[in-house]
Length: 130
Image 1 (tube, rainbow, N blue to C red):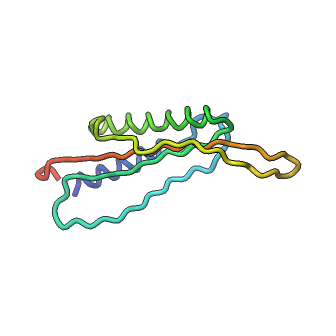
Image 2: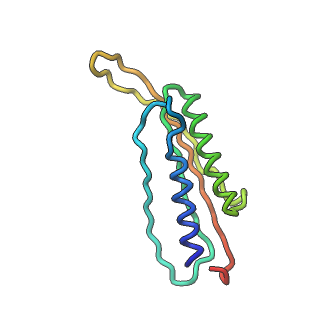
Image 3: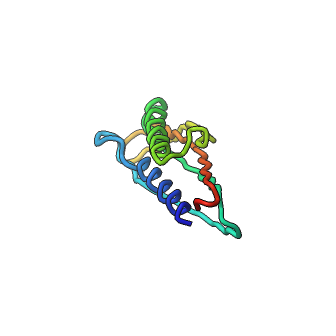
């Protein structure tokens, strides 16, 4: 049970690292951290599968991808620092979408880009250590 709590705390910290603002000059965007979970264990678990996502919005597609990739790299480093092997962290999705921002208060309509990247983390441990 202690190992489960450690893995869950690790995930929350890794996601929080990804939610921190990249730099003061970056466009202000509401920061959100969302976590949901449902679990039921009839036996002592020895594996956990965790899904993480990074979502960044910027004025250009390239900038959105660069910022999202930096966040994913920070999450991967945090996971490696906690002893999760690189082969247990897999990219499960990457996307870039263009969004139209409506014209407001005399400003013309414009576009912005959203880069999203998802990771799947499989954490395993010996049943005797749980």
